[in-house]
Length: 377
Image 1 (cartoon, one colour):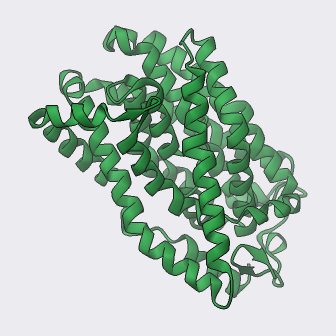
Image 2: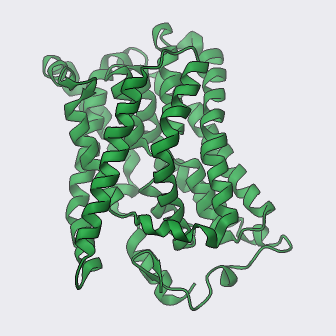
Image 3: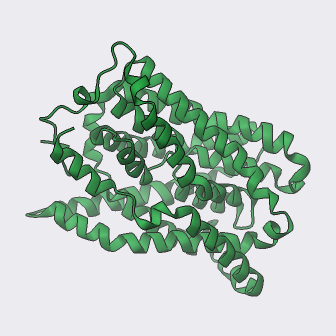
Protein backbone atom coordinates (compact mmCIF):
# COMPACT_ATOMS: atom_id res chain seq x y z
CA UNK A 1 0.00 0.00 0.00
CA UNK A 2 1.37 3.44 -0.87
CA UNK A 3 2.12 5.98 1.88
CA UNK A 4 -0.74 8.20 0.70
CA UNK A 5 -3.21 5.31 0.64
CA UNK A 6 -2.20 4.09 4.08
CA UNK A 7 -2.24 7.56 5.65
CA UNK A 8 -5.67 8.39 4.25
CA UNK A 9 -7.10 5.08 5.42
CA UNK A 10 -5.81 5.71 8.92
CA UNK A 11 -7.41 9.13 9.06
CA UNK A 12 -10.73 7.71 7.92
CA UNK A 13 -10.83 4.59 10.04
CA UNK A 14 -8.91 5.16 13.29
CA UNK A 15 -10.55 3.77 16.42
CA UNK A 16 -11.65 6.63 18.63
CA UNK A 17 -12.07 6.74 22.40
CA UNK A 18 -15.71 5.69 22.21
CA UNK A 19 -15.14 2.74 19.89
CA UNK A 20 -12.13 1.52 21.89
CA UNK A 21 -14.11 1.40 25.12
CA UNK A 22 -17.55 0.55 23.70
CA UNK A 23 -17.95 -2.37 26.10
CA UNK A 24 -17.34 -0.04 29.07
CA UNK A 25 -19.92 2.49 27.84
CA UNK A 26 -22.47 -0.27 27.31
CA UNK A 27 -21.79 -1.56 30.82
CA UNK A 28 -22.38 1.94 32.22
CA UNK A 29 -25.62 2.15 30.22
CA UNK A 30 -26.71 -1.13 31.80
CA UNK A 31 -26.22 0.32 35.27
CA UNK A 32 -27.85 3.65 34.37
CA UNK A 33 -30.78 2.01 32.57
CA UNK A 34 -31.52 -0.46 35.34
CA UNK A 35 -31.31 2.27 37.99
CA UNK A 36 -33.50 4.75 36.10
CA UNK A 37 -35.97 2.04 35.13
CA UNK A 38 -36.36 1.03 38.76
CA UNK A 39 -36.96 4.55 40.11
CA UNK A 40 -38.77 6.08 37.11
CA UNK A 41 -40.72 3.12 35.78
CA UNK A 42 -43.80 5.22 34.92
CA UNK A 43 -41.77 7.53 32.66
CA UNK A 44 -40.32 4.57 30.78
CA UNK A 45 -43.79 3.12 30.27
CA UNK A 46 -44.92 6.42 28.74
CA UNK A 47 -41.95 6.40 26.34
CA UNK A 48 -42.68 2.81 25.42
CA UNK A 49 -46.26 3.71 24.52
CA UNK A 50 -45.35 6.44 22.04
CA UNK A 51 -45.95 4.40 18.88
CA UNK A 52 -47.27 4.93 15.37
CA UNK A 53 -47.98 1.78 13.30
CA UNK A 54 -46.05 -0.30 15.89
CA UNK A 55 -42.93 1.87 15.44
CA UNK A 56 -41.77 3.46 18.68
CA UNK A 57 -41.20 7.15 17.94
CA UNK A 58 -38.39 7.84 20.46
CA UNK A 59 -36.48 4.82 19.19
CA UNK A 60 -37.08 5.78 15.54
CA UNK A 61 -35.61 9.23 16.15
CA UNK A 62 -32.63 7.82 18.04
CA UNK A 63 -31.95 5.18 15.39
CA UNK A 64 -32.02 7.78 12.62
CA UNK A 65 -29.54 9.86 14.62
CA UNK A 66 -27.34 6.75 14.88
CA UNK A 67 -27.64 5.41 11.36
CA UNK A 68 -27.69 8.45 9.06
CA UNK A 69 -24.21 9.73 10.07
CA UNK A 70 -22.86 6.21 9.50
CA UNK A 71 -24.50 5.93 6.08
CA UNK A 72 -23.10 9.34 5.11
CA UNK A 73 -19.71 7.63 4.97
CA UNK A 74 -20.90 5.17 2.31
CA UNK A 75 -20.45 6.11 -1.33
CA UNK A 76 -22.89 3.97 -3.32
CA UNK A 77 -20.84 4.70 -6.45
CA UNK A 78 -18.23 2.38 -4.93
CA UNK A 79 -20.46 -0.48 -6.10
CA UNK A 80 -18.72 -0.30 -9.46
CA UNK A 81 -15.54 -1.43 -7.72
CA UNK A 82 -16.86 -4.80 -6.54
CA UNK A 83 -15.41 -6.54 -9.59
CA UNK A 84 -11.86 -5.57 -8.62
CA UNK A 85 -11.86 -8.14 -5.79
CA UNK A 86 -14.69 -10.39 -6.92
CA UNK A 87 -13.40 -13.45 -5.06
CA UNK A 88 -13.44 -11.66 -1.71
CA UNK A 89 -16.82 -10.10 -2.48
CA UNK A 90 -18.26 -13.50 -3.37
CA UNK A 91 -16.97 -15.10 -0.17
CA UNK A 92 -18.29 -12.25 1.99
CA UNK A 93 -21.72 -12.32 0.38
CA UNK A 94 -21.91 -16.09 0.83
CA UNK A 95 -21.03 -15.89 4.53
CA UNK A 96 -23.19 -12.81 5.25
CA UNK A 97 -26.36 -13.96 3.55
CA UNK A 98 -26.19 -17.74 3.05
CA UNK A 99 -24.42 -18.82 6.25
CA UNK A 100 -24.50 -16.34 9.14
CA UNK A 101 -28.26 -15.93 9.72
CA UNK A 102 -28.80 -19.68 9.41
CA UNK A 103 -25.85 -20.65 11.61
CA UNK A 104 -27.06 -18.22 14.27
CA UNK A 105 -30.57 -19.68 14.09
CA UNK A 106 -29.09 -23.17 14.52
CA UNK A 107 -26.99 -22.03 17.50
CA UNK A 108 -30.03 -20.30 18.99
CA UNK A 109 -32.12 -23.45 18.70
CA UNK A 110 -29.29 -25.57 20.13
CA UNK A 111 -28.28 -23.40 23.09
CA UNK A 112 -31.23 -21.13 23.93
CA UNK A 113 -33.98 -23.54 22.94
CA UNK A 114 -32.16 -26.61 24.20
CA UNK A 115 -29.11 -26.67 26.47
CA UNK A 116 -29.77 -23.40 28.33
CA UNK A 117 -33.56 -23.64 28.43
CA UNK A 118 -33.79 -24.64 32.14
CA UNK A 119 -32.00 -21.41 33.20
CA UNK A 120 -34.04 -18.99 31.04
CA UNK A 121 -37.58 -17.60 31.42
CA UNK A 122 -39.84 -20.03 29.55
CA UNK A 123 -42.01 -17.25 28.09
CA UNK A 124 -38.98 -15.52 26.51
CA UNK A 125 -37.21 -18.46 24.84
CA UNK A 126 -38.67 -17.79 21.38
CA UNK A 127 -38.05 -14.08 21.78
CA UNK A 128 -34.36 -14.61 22.61
CA UNK A 129 -33.94 -16.80 19.53
CA UNK A 130 -35.69 -14.18 17.39
CA UNK A 131 -33.31 -11.48 18.67
CA UNK A 132 -30.28 -13.59 17.79
CA UNK A 133 -31.64 -14.18 14.28
CA UNK A 134 -32.32 -10.46 13.75
CA UNK A 135 -28.81 -9.62 14.96
CA UNK A 136 -27.16 -12.06 12.55
CA UNK A 137 -29.25 -10.97 9.54
CA UNK A 138 -27.87 -7.41 9.63
CA UNK A 139 -24.24 -7.15 8.37
CA UNK A 140 -22.16 -4.42 9.99
CA UNK A 141 -21.77 -1.03 8.30
CA UNK A 142 -19.88 1.60 10.29
CA UNK A 143 -17.49 -0.32 12.53
CA UNK A 144 -16.28 -2.39 9.58
CA UNK A 145 -14.03 0.50 8.53
CA UNK A 146 -12.35 0.37 11.94
CA UNK A 147 -11.80 -3.39 11.78
CA UNK A 148 -10.53 -3.16 8.20
CA UNK A 149 -8.02 -0.47 9.18
CA UNK A 150 -6.73 -2.46 12.15
CA UNK A 151 -6.19 -5.52 9.94
CA UNK A 152 -4.45 -3.49 7.18
CA UNK A 153 -7.37 -4.19 4.86
CA UNK A 154 -7.69 -2.96 1.29
CA UNK A 155 -9.85 0.20 1.65
CA UNK A 156 -11.51 0.01 -1.77
CA UNK A 157 -12.68 -3.55 -1.13
CA UNK A 158 -14.10 -2.59 2.27
CA UNK A 159 -15.94 0.43 0.89
CA UNK A 160 -17.44 -1.42 -2.08
CA UNK A 161 -18.39 -4.44 0.05
CA UNK A 162 -20.19 -2.29 2.63
CA UNK A 163 -22.04 -0.37 -0.09
CA UNK A 164 -23.13 -3.65 -1.67
CA UNK A 165 -24.31 -5.05 1.67
CA UNK A 166 -26.36 -1.91 2.32
CA UNK A 167 -28.19 -2.33 -0.97
CA UNK A 168 -28.73 -6.07 -0.48
CA UNK A 169 -30.10 -5.43 3.01
CA UNK A 170 -33.04 -3.53 1.51
CA UNK A 171 -34.21 -6.67 -0.29
CA UNK A 172 -32.85 -9.59 1.77
CA UNK A 173 -33.17 -8.57 5.43
CA UNK A 174 -36.95 -8.97 5.79
CA UNK A 175 -37.28 -12.27 3.83
CA UNK A 176 -34.41 -13.94 5.73
CA UNK A 177 -35.67 -12.79 9.13
CA UNK A 178 -39.24 -13.80 8.22
CA UNK A 179 -38.13 -17.24 6.98
CA UNK A 180 -36.05 -18.08 10.04
CA UNK A 181 -38.64 -16.78 12.50
CA UNK A 182 -41.22 -18.91 10.70
CA UNK A 183 -38.99 -21.98 10.95
CA UNK A 184 -38.70 -21.23 14.67
CA UNK A 185 -42.52 -21.28 14.94
CA UNK A 186 -42.47 -17.58 15.84
CA UNK A 187 -45.36 -15.51 14.45
CA UNK A 188 -44.03 -13.06 11.88
CA UNK A 189 -45.78 -9.66 11.80
CA UNK A 190 -44.86 -9.03 8.16
CA UNK A 191 -46.35 -5.54 8.04
CA UNK A 192 -44.18 -4.46 10.99
CA UNK A 193 -41.09 -6.19 9.57
CA UNK A 194 -41.45 -4.53 6.17
CA UNK A 195 -42.15 -1.19 7.85
CA UNK A 196 -38.94 -1.62 9.87
CA UNK A 197 -36.97 -2.15 6.66
CA UNK A 198 -38.53 1.00 5.19
CA UNK A 199 -38.01 3.14 8.30
CA UNK A 200 -34.60 1.88 9.41
CA UNK A 201 -32.89 1.00 6.10
CA UNK A 202 -34.49 2.52 3.01
CA UNK A 203 -35.34 6.01 4.27
CA UNK A 204 -32.03 6.61 6.11
CA UNK A 205 -30.05 5.30 3.12
CA UNK A 206 -31.90 7.64 0.72
CA UNK A 207 -31.52 10.64 3.04
CA UNK A 208 -27.82 9.95 3.64
CA UNK A 209 -27.09 9.49 -0.08
CA UNK A 210 -28.87 12.72 -1.06
CA UNK A 211 -27.21 14.65 1.77
CA UNK A 212 -23.79 13.24 0.85
CA UNK A 213 -24.16 14.28 -2.79
CA UNK A 214 -25.22 17.80 -1.77
CA UNK A 215 -22.23 18.13 0.55
CA UNK A 216 -19.83 16.96 -2.16
CA UNK A 217 -20.96 19.54 -4.68
CA UNK A 218 -18.54 22.32 -5.50
CA UNK A 219 -15.02 22.95 -4.31
CA UNK A 220 -13.71 21.28 -1.12
CA UNK A 221 -16.63 18.86 -1.07
CA UNK A 222 -14.81 16.08 0.78
CA UNK A 223 -13.54 18.51 3.39
CA UNK A 224 -17.09 19.75 3.91
CA UNK A 225 -18.34 16.17 4.26
CA UNK A 226 -15.63 15.38 6.79
CA UNK A 227 -16.56 18.41 8.90
CA UNK A 228 -20.23 17.38 8.94
CA UNK A 229 -19.29 13.83 9.96
CA UNK A 230 -17.13 15.15 12.79
CA UNK A 231 -19.99 17.31 14.07
CA UNK A 232 -22.52 14.48 13.84
CA UNK A 233 -20.27 11.88 15.48
CA UNK A 234 -20.99 12.90 19.11
CA UNK A 235 -24.72 13.11 18.33
CA UNK A 236 -24.71 9.63 16.83
CA UNK A 237 -22.89 8.15 19.80
CA UNK A 238 -25.20 9.90 22.26
CA UNK A 239 -28.21 8.46 20.44
CA UNK A 240 -26.75 4.95 20.70
CA UNK A 241 -26.16 5.33 24.43
CA UNK A 242 -29.64 6.79 24.98
CA UNK A 243 -31.19 3.83 23.15
CA UNK A 244 -29.28 1.40 25.36
CA UNK A 245 -30.38 3.22 28.51
CA UNK A 246 -34.00 2.94 27.35
CA UNK A 247 -33.61 -0.77 26.64
CA UNK A 248 -32.06 -1.58 29.97
CA UNK A 249 -34.59 0.62 31.72
CA UNK A 250 -37.28 -1.78 30.48
CA UNK A 251 -35.17 -4.93 30.94
CA UNK A 252 -33.77 -4.02 34.37
CA UNK A 253 -36.07 -6.03 36.61
CA UNK A 254 -35.62 -9.16 34.51
CA UNK A 255 -31.82 -8.80 34.50
CA UNK A 256 -31.70 -8.27 38.27
CA UNK A 257 -33.86 -11.35 38.80
CA UNK A 258 -31.73 -13.50 36.45
CA UNK A 259 -28.29 -11.96 35.78
CA UNK A 260 -27.14 -15.21 34.15
CA UNK A 261 -29.27 -14.37 31.09
CA UNK A 262 -26.69 -12.06 29.50
CA UNK A 263 -23.89 -14.64 29.85
CA UNK A 264 -26.04 -17.38 28.33
CA UNK A 265 -27.08 -15.19 25.39
CA UNK A 266 -23.45 -14.30 24.75
CA UNK A 267 -22.46 -17.93 24.12
CA UNK A 268 -24.13 -18.43 20.68
CA UNK A 269 -23.06 -14.91 19.63
CA UNK A 270 -19.42 -15.64 20.45
CA UNK A 271 -19.49 -18.98 18.64
CA UNK A 272 -21.07 -17.54 15.50
CA UNK A 273 -18.54 -14.66 15.35
CA UNK A 274 -15.55 -16.98 15.46
CA UNK A 275 -17.17 -19.58 13.19
CA UNK A 276 -18.19 -17.12 10.46
CA UNK A 277 -14.99 -15.10 10.55
CA UNK A 278 -12.93 -18.29 10.38
CA UNK A 279 -15.03 -19.65 7.53
CA UNK A 280 -14.68 -16.44 5.50
CA UNK A 281 -10.93 -16.33 6.16
CA UNK A 282 -10.37 -19.93 5.07
CA UNK A 283 -12.60 -19.62 2.01
CA UNK A 284 -10.69 -16.53 0.89
CA UNK A 285 -7.44 -18.46 1.24
CA UNK A 286 -8.94 -21.31 -0.76
CA UNK A 287 -9.92 -19.00 -3.65
CA UNK A 288 -6.55 -17.19 -3.34
CA UNK A 289 -7.76 -13.73 -2.33
CA UNK A 290 -4.94 -11.50 -1.02
CA UNK A 291 -4.65 -11.16 2.75
CA UNK A 292 -5.62 -7.46 2.64
CA UNK A 293 -8.99 -8.60 1.23
CA UNK A 294 -9.37 -11.76 3.33
CA UNK A 295 -8.95 -9.80 6.58
CA UNK A 296 -11.82 -7.33 6.12
CA UNK A 297 -13.88 -10.06 4.43
CA UNK A 298 -13.63 -12.21 7.56
CA UNK A 299 -14.47 -9.27 9.81
CA UNK A 300 -17.43 -8.11 7.69
CA UNK A 301 -18.65 -11.69 7.71
CA UNK A 302 -18.61 -11.80 11.51
CA UNK A 303 -19.73 -8.38 12.78
CA UNK A 304 -23.30 -7.07 13.00
CA UNK A 305 -25.26 -3.88 12.29
CA UNK A 306 -26.48 -3.83 15.88
CA UNK A 307 -28.22 -0.44 15.61
CA UNK A 308 -30.58 -1.85 12.98
CA UNK A 309 -30.99 -5.09 14.91
CA UNK A 310 -31.93 -3.31 18.14
CA UNK A 311 -34.48 -1.09 16.37
CA UNK A 312 -36.06 -4.01 14.50
CA UNK A 313 -36.29 -6.15 17.64
CA UNK A 314 -38.05 -3.32 19.48
CA UNK A 315 -40.46 -2.75 16.58
CA UNK A 316 -41.35 -6.43 16.29
CA UNK A 317 -41.39 -7.53 19.93
CA UNK A 318 -41.25 -4.43 22.13
CA UNK A 319 -38.86 -2.84 24.62
CA UNK A 320 -39.38 -5.47 27.30
CA UNK A 321 -38.86 -8.45 25.00
CA UNK A 322 -36.09 -11.00 25.13
CA UNK A 323 -35.41 -10.19 21.46
CA UNK A 324 -34.43 -6.61 22.32
CA UNK A 325 -32.18 -7.84 25.13
CA UNK A 326 -30.49 -10.43 22.86
CA UNK A 327 -29.56 -7.75 20.30
CA UNK A 328 -28.10 -5.55 23.04
CA UNK A 329 -25.88 -8.40 24.24
CA UNK A 330 -24.39 -8.26 20.73
CA UNK A 331 -23.46 -4.62 21.36
CA UNK A 332 -21.94 -5.53 24.73
CA UNK A 333 -19.43 -8.02 23.33
CA UNK A 334 -18.85 -6.47 19.88
CA UNK A 335 -15.53 -4.69 20.48
CA UNK A 336 -13.58 -7.26 22.55
CA UNK A 337 -14.63 -10.13 20.30
CA UNK A 338 -13.84 -8.29 17.06
CA UNK A 339 -10.49 -7.07 18.42
CA UNK A 340 -9.63 -10.69 19.21
CA UNK A 341 -10.58 -11.65 15.64
CA UNK A 342 -8.43 -8.83 14.24
CA UNK A 343 -5.51 -10.16 16.32
CA UNK A 344 -5.89 -13.65 14.85
CA UNK A 345 -6.07 -12.26 11.29
CA UNK A 346 -2.93 -10.18 11.77
CA UNK A 347 -0.90 -12.92 13.46
CA UNK A 348 -1.69 -15.49 10.76
CA UNK A 349 -0.76 -13.35 7.76
CA UNK A 350 2.49 -15.27 7.17
CA UNK A 351 0.64 -18.59 7.21
CA UNK A 352 -2.09 -17.20 4.94
CA UNK A 353 0.35 -15.96 2.29
CA UNK A 354 2.33 -19.21 2.38
CA UNK A 355 -0.31 -20.82 0.16
CA UNK A 356 0.81 -21.01 -3.47
CA UNK A 357 -0.95 -18.50 -5.67
CA UNK A 358 -2.01 -16.09 -2.91
CA UNK A 359 -0.93 -12.54 -3.84
CA UNK A 360 1.38 -10.72 -1.44
CA UNK A 361 0.40 -7.47 0.26
CA UNK A 362 2.36 -5.38 -2.26
CA UNK A 363 0.53 -7.06 -5.15
CA UNK A 364 -2.81 -6.40 -3.42
CA UNK A 365 -2.14 -2.65 -3.07
CA UNK A 366 0.17 -1.57 -5.90
CA UNK A 367 1.96 1.80 -5.56
CA UNK A 368 -0.23 3.54 -8.15
CA UNK A 369 -3.42 2.93 -6.17
CA UNK A 370 -4.57 5.87 -4.08
CA UNK A 371 -7.62 6.53 -2.01
CA UNK A 372 -9.51 9.78 -2.50
CA UNK A 373 -12.96 9.89 -1.00
CA UNK A 374 -13.57 6.25 -1.76
CA UNK A 375 -12.58 6.37 -5.45
CA UNK A 376 -9.65 5.19 -7.51
CA UNK A 377 -7.57 8.04 -8.89
